[in-house]
Image 1: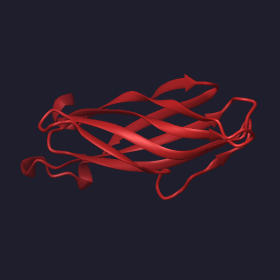
Image 2: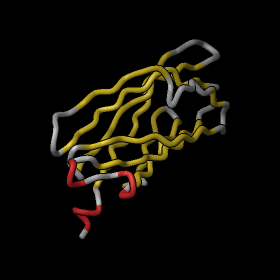
Image 3: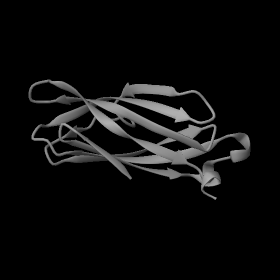
Length: 128
């Protein structure tokens, strides 16, 4: 698990290779990642947008952007947290992801960026 803290917001990510959904001989490797966002700031915040940079050893870097996370734009009170699970497919069994969230402080409308720490995606073929 990797973590990063930005302006009191802690983002932790844990990644898992999914061999039962992968087909290495067809260059299809599936990974899931569980993200936990903790609001340790004194402000109520809302996650508005996400941006991911996806690096695949067998392909070019991809950028994925959009509103919220898995269809939600959660509001986190001070001390609150939000957890979700998502996934990524790679052509190789080796890659990494990193990114950022755009957040808003509800009280004053201030927009700020929160770092999503870089994490590795390594399939079993590289671990044997």
